[in-house]
Amino acid sequence: MGSTILEIVLGAVIAILITIWVENLKKPRLTIQIARPGDRRYEGRPAKRAKFLYVEVANNPLPRWARWMSRDAATQCHGTVSFYHLDGGNLFGRSMPVRWSTTPEPAAPSFRIDDKLIVISDPTRFNMSARVDIYPGEKEPIDIAAKFDDEMDCYGWSNESYFSEPVWRNPRWRVAPGRYLVKVVVTSSGEKASAVFRLINDVPIDDFRLEPKLKGDKTHD
Image (tube, rainbow, N blue to C red; front, side):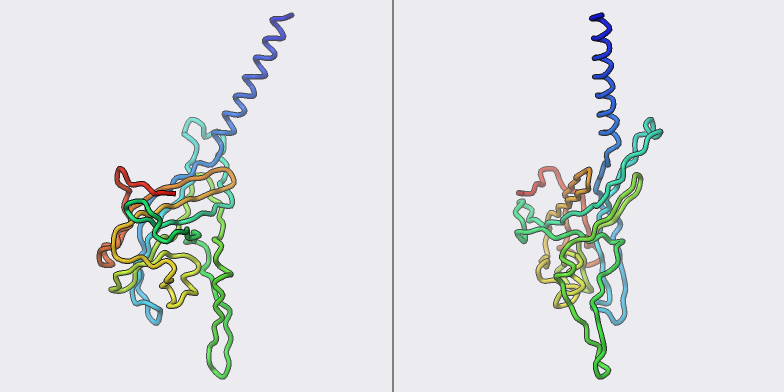
């Protein structure tokens, strides 16, 4: 009798542990990596040439041996981008809400008066980052920074950039020539991931880039 009760209890404990292990295995697993930069040419825009730097957030699929199950989607993903000096001090003393590159560009309401186009800019409408869902095996890019024409400064890129003065060059996120650290933090309903990269901004636009961090690179948070 005692042996039977022990077997029942042991079986229940094993079942609970397996359930916990499976649920933990199915949780989203986010990783953040450098993505290919975007080099764009324009006419009649605030710059003739722009280079955008991105990272990609991936929700990694389950290991091959576990593909009979499904990994959960990372829902309501949002996050921040922070810029640091190489010594780890925060460059601005604050973090920039992420802009997901695949979300629509914010559009300001406009109307015409006497053949003049009036645009109403309200940056406060776009201070909060959009949220996206990332399904297993999929990636979503995040805007990090942009550099224009032959200018030496670059700028952190977010929804605010579309309403800044001057436009595209938000002085709140102006980064002078130099080398810096960039920390990206992404949070979803079931996972949090972060990564640190080097921002190379002491070069012309062709060489403007993100690089992997070096050993010893740390941010003081």
